[in-house]
Amino acid sequence: MSAPWTEWDHIVKIDPDKSLVDGESYEDVCRTGTDAIEVGGTTGMTEEKMQAVVEACSEHDVPLYIEPGVDATVVHTDSLDGYLIPIVFNAGDVSWMTGAHKEWVRLDDGIDWARTNTEAYIVLNPDSSVATYTQANCDLDAEDVAAYATIAERMFGQEIVYVEYSGTFGDPEIVAAAGDALDDATLFYGGGIHDYDSAHEMGERADTVVVGDLVHDEGVDAVRETVRGATDAN
Ligand SMILES: CC(C)=CCC/C(C)=C/CC/C(C)=C/CC/C(C)=C/COP(=O)(O)OP(=O)(O)O
Ligand SMILES: O=P(O)(O)OC[C@@H](O)CO
Ligand SMILES: [Mg+2]
Image (cartoon, rainbow, N blue to C red; front, side):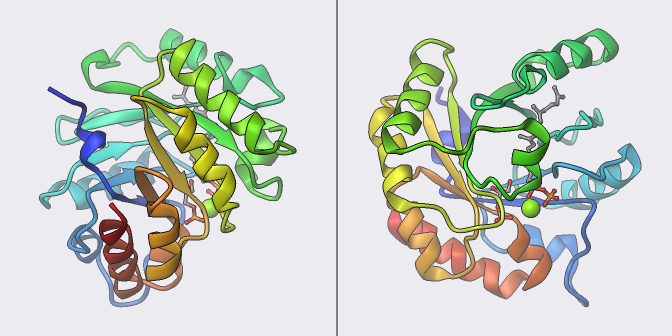
């Protein structure tokens, strides 16, 4: 059986450190037509904040995953479909490749490996907090990004490669180069998706588009448009 994300066109990433638009609920977010919810953010996470969002979303019929950030906050509950653990392939600080992971495994005796998978991040917006924290080398051209995607798949057996422009709309040619480099891995794209056209454009180049800030800044009607764009592109 193939992994669930091979069927996804669209993900909403909810940051528990940010609020929803006035009058909207997590139920509304779950009902946008998105294929999955990821709960996470680079900074400002606590177990309480994460638990509250997980609980609110778990009552609705959409696959639900935690994606821990730099503080490695993970809550364990049966209502989750799984845990997507980032590994930053172009990090300048190796903690974000294996160090944080080693500490998590050392300290957390509740890890459910059957529901735990990794995402091979290539971080490309130098102004994002994820780039700052991980000291990512974002000065990469399409060939560099394609080569990172290839090593992630071929040398490190990664099932998900994530081209991450968090906060800004990325270079479609770079995303296409990553897609062309992959045979079996699923390509996630995230960054600056804000309407039908931007979701459609990146949805043609990546397998799955991830929408983050839009849900907090504009709300569920705008998210629904991106679901349409990503779905039409696939
Ligand atoms: C080993 C464990 C459990 C955790 C470590 C996981 C790692 C390597 C985290 C590194 C940072 C990372 C790739 C986080 C993923 C989530 C993400 C990129 C969220 C978007 O963040 P930004 O948009 O940069 O920041 P804000 O949260 O401030 O918006
Ligand atoms: O917040 P945005 O820019 O939509 O980015 C989504 C996601 O890739 C962040 O990790
Ligand atoms: Mg962000």
